[in-house]
Image: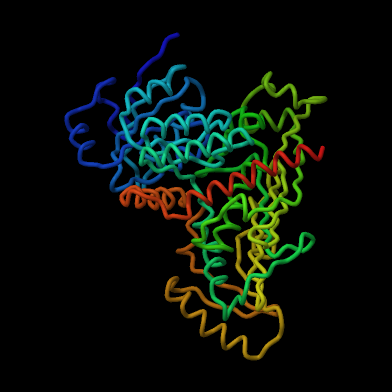
Length: 460
């Protein structure tokens, strides 16, 4: 079968000779310690990693992919970032397309950081082969979508350790300011007290999110690939978005604590449910005139059923937790994706709400468990340490407790969080290691999601 090599030089560099590098580029590559290898970029998150430039990353990016609309959509987004009127990027994309794209990437090794964000069916295999080849990997979630994938992911982490490379997933939600502050406040006994244990019926920690198939990204309607609606390729909701929620539970409740999935996690129950998508809705979001053959198994009477909804009830180090994700087709006018989170402490509950009353923007509240005249003074004193870290945040009293008012400078938006994750990952690459708790906790996270899917299917 034919393969082809295309050099895409964007933002005014289109005149470069295709198929070769200039002396300037070669010199630049030597001066920058990191160089990206983007593999099969089928999800818009691949482009979001490159919405910003990075001091230690070469501007020449090597892309390896199968030929088709996915890689074209990725390149179109990069070109928009390169040509935007303000804060334009200057990426140069050298693109190889062909059925042997992965083998070609592994043989050439033109970079040292593999970026993976796309079809999840083979992602875990790509991860394993990349770290086996001595390449660092920054992967979009989920890194595993089933029990078999979890086993392969464990092997990948062992291989990464052996080959002294770093495997890391893109946990953007840690950088959303209300999540960050909720974790910060939970660490202050004078404000939060102690994390409660809760019960299966009334968990101490709940995190829920609502998402939509049709949405706008970077100001334009998002066109999703047809495979996104195939749970065999994208993964079910219970192993996809819940990855973020399970991560937040671990990260918020037990910060910097190394978890052992065999000892610290007890699955209690799991549910899965389908979202129905009509043929016209499918066309709107994919631009495809019909359902592809690989979705025929999920189509009945011209309606597609996508198992995008999931709920997991479990115990983490004895703390009862619930995570749930729901997918609708499109948000009502003026709304969008939403998030709800509660952490229950002995002194107060920390709650993130994002509904109509909050104008669909996440807002963090402190709600005391009991009326105590001394609590307000203790809160004000302890809150000063948070204000030192996040200047400008304030307490605003209401009838249930306090709302945390957050300056607009901290509300940078979901898309900006990809650069924040990437910068943190690059710090780890400089140090040559991840924090001791990160790998065991990634393993614990994917054990939770993939085991929950297995449990949910067994219940049917």
